[in-house]
Amino acid sequence: MTSLASYPKSPGTQSLERAIQLLRELAVRGTTGWSLRDLAQHCGLDHATVHRMLKCLVQARLAQQRPSDRRYLIGPLAFELGLSLPRQSQLTDGTRNAVRRLVRSTPHVWSVAYLHSGDDCVCIARAGTSSHATEATSIRVGHRAPLLSLAGGIAILAALPAERARETAERNRERMAHLGPSHLANLMSLIRTSARSGYVMSAGTVWQGIHAVAASFGAPGFPVGSLVVASGTAFQADALRHIVPELMAAAGTLAVQPVPG
Image (cartoon, rainbow, N blue to C red; front, side):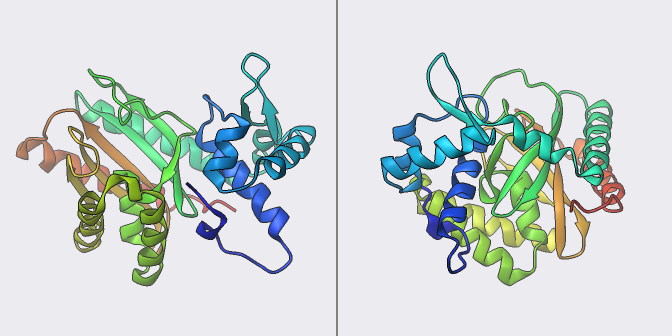
């Protein structure tokens, strides 16, 4: 369950904070959507409150209700508002070019770019395909997930100042408690290792059967996002000697891209 405790609060803004929480969760399930009951339960809010707020969000076109199954999804106004951020468009173009170059230079891999979004990361670009379909290999543009749940997110956490990284990771751990303490401890250890090396190396640590290398981009201490190269098979040493410098160079190029407003 994701509760309001996961997000910072300000006095007198409870309704606004709840609306933001609902929008975040609608974005998590960008294509499948939420039933009213499941969304209310997931957010720790009562049914009537969520129904009232969704009605308002639908009227404002920040949310929409799919006629075929009555499930709620993020609305078109969210996309339209994003168009007013020209620097975001430049960043999108830069990450698309980066992931395409990375898959061209390394066969049998896919590459993903993530954008840092509070306690989460959002897939902003993807290239390449996988020979087998899993939840990890089917991530598409718009996919939102806790930073701690993805190699690209861990790269972002590792690039944050230590105290902020710890606080963010702890909030993520609360949301991911169902994965068990052992797995979460391994993910926390990966943050520390990655902070020392400057990049993430996951040999099935984050997702079983998925091998990934990830690096953040952005100003020191202020990661804007991350790039990932992943495969369903283990990387050979010769391949890593090629992949890591390519990935770091691509991330370095994106570091000079304008920071989203």
